[in-house]
Amino acid sequence: MAKIGLFCCFILVTLFANNRDCEAEKVGVYELKRGDFSVKFTNYGATMLSAILPDKNGKLSDVVLGFDSLQGYKNDTTYFGAIVGRVANRIGRAQFHLNGTYYQLVNNDGLNILHGGYKGFSDVVWTVESHRKDSHVTFTYHSYDGEDGFPGEVDVSVTYMIIEENKLGVKMEAKALNKATPVNLALHTYWNLGGHDSGDIFSHNLQLFGSKITPVDDELIPTGEIKSIKGTPYDFLQPREIGSRFNELPHGYDINYVLDDTNSDHLKKVAVVQESVSGRKLELWTNQPGVQFYSSNMLGHVKGKGGFVYSNYAGFALETQGFPDSVNHPNFPSQILNPGETYEHVMVYRFTAD
Image (cartoon, rainbow, N blue to C red; front, side, top):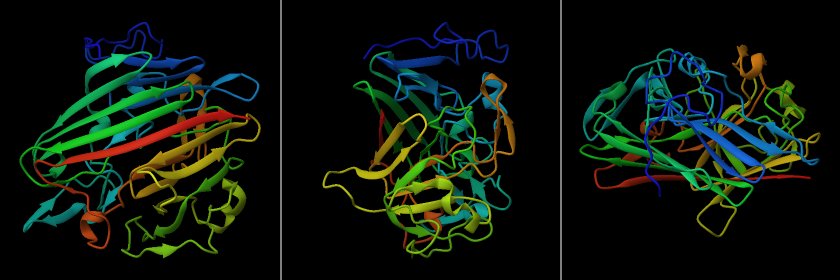
């Protein structure tokens, strides 16, 4: 693994070229590439910036929503492509008890905390540990005791790995150094397999291997129940278009699925998504118990790459994760990481087109 120095606005891409907001020799763009498949990242938020994939006719398109400048990501409220944490998703009333101690966190979503708080891991500059264009890039971050109210120091890393010419692996790790603390990291990429600028995602066919969900209240905080999806608009056990039952939902999809044990190995198959015009297909596996399926219901009108305006439903997110608000629901899988333990979160994407 080749050690490299940090660099700013380098020549790999023009994404941050001449951007005055680049922090000198801290923020850069790092590419992974095999054949026609290329993915770009930045150490600002350990963020996925783009993914270039061929369609069934060999035409290349970027299928990840995002911005043209660093400032876009700094001002972002959508978490485009970022690693979110220390605890992804929501914690109700931004509070929890752990080992007899009450913790009040920084609320940034009404009375609740979302994706780690006002700053979180998505709005910090990570260290570039290593990078090799045909192999991997590893980002690391040290989270201090009390960051956004969370207890203890935590060392975090994420490695993006390009595997063969059509697979992307993601490995997130965390170690609690001196106190028990909740940890739940997620990759918040928004996908549109027709191309980031191709409109809504209603015609994408989705198969999602979760037969239960964790229902939420009006503030999107889990009630603590685990319910079957049978007969509901949340049922994607058989492939169907994302938009096919949209009119039965008040705002769209934004819910955690309890993943089924579909494989005999340690990774669960999460979903298969295919866009009919391009033929592009995304398959996803993980070792996590849940996945948040989000149909970008709250984008509004966000000016993105090339000046394209992303409206609601312009992308979908499949955020593999622990269950939201687990710290307040003992019946959910625990997210508590004790000193000496290692949190490990694995995702594998496979991209094809036919």
